[in-house]
Image (cartoon, rainbow, N blue to C red; front, side, top):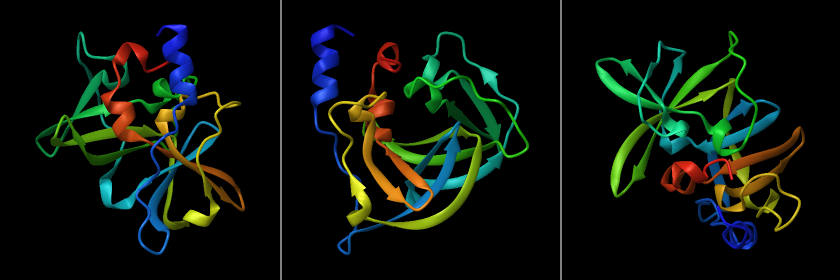
Amino acid sequence: MQPVELMQDILTKPASANWDDQGQLEVLTFDLGEETLAIEAIQVREILDLLPETKVPGAPMLVSSVVNFRGKIIPIADLRLAFDMPPAQVSVDSRIIVIEIEVDGEPTQIGMRTDKVHEVTTLNRNDAETPPAVGMRWRRDFIHDLVRQSGGIIVLPNLGAIFSTDPSDASS
């Protein structure tokens, strides 16, 4: 990514999450390393124990393997790459969250490796802020909102932006 493009990404205001009319959002929370993230509960299809993965030659690093679950091939994403995090340490708590999102106008199931899945909870818009223009170690367009909670900050990733990004730019 060129320096001008990188600066535009940093300064571009990210899209907000899909808060309901009461300013609430039901999410599934999970950990990646030291960070707690959350995705809209309505997108979650399954939570799986880790399964044997098959590497796909030539696939983008972000989604470089697949699993066979109940006869269906599901691509597996490593959000750590999008957020430039160190590699995962597999543990007994590691899981795959299978979500369904629209990719190129088509509903698509994608599995995301996590370190630990927590719970379904409701977040309030009053506790949320868009990511700051400076001081973020991640691309702003990859984050909908940062939500303050008693235990810290929950990151609401913008999965649409992450999965529509040129794979070579995912770690920029």
